[in-house]
Length: 173
Ligand SMILES: Cc1cc2nc3c(=O)[nH]c(=O)nc-3n(C[C@H](O)[C@H](O)[C@H](O)COP(=O)(O)O)c2cc1C
Image (tube, rainbow, N blue to C red; front, side, top):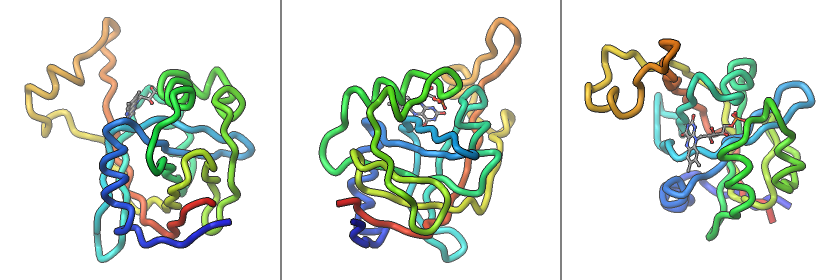
């Protein structure tokens, strides 16, 4: 069962839980994947309720999200699950099936194409309305030094921002 909520109602929980890590879910064909995110914002753009995420180029999620219009956000109400955090925050969906390895129970979406997760019941179904790769020139030097130094091959693992309009919001019961 899904209990309707207004996005504003869960903004404090989402913001608090982001400090520990919540889930960004994507789906391409039959492949579902879930990644822990610590960066994100809930807010308003163009008069729409939105949730914004930041995904590095190296993530499997990057490939998935570039091929889809939709993502879902899944957030626990109180506590994070250590196994979910470990699997979804350190393993790549390229190599494993995170649904199986993390013991995720998927909940069919109501509006978009990407399921939610029963274990993390606060669910936002988001449709991407804007995407933008971060520009190196516009990032403060101290942030570049901390986060975006090139590796030995010269590759800088930059973030792309995806702004999703929150088309549906509910708690899975
Ligand atoms: C607490 C925490 C927060 C994270 N936040 C982000 C984030 O905001 N953006 C990002 O690209 N990766 C973030 N990561 C890293 C990804 O979760 C991790 O690399 C994951 O294994 C990627 O999975 P994928 O390759 O299946 O997409 C975070 C990891 C942790 C543990």
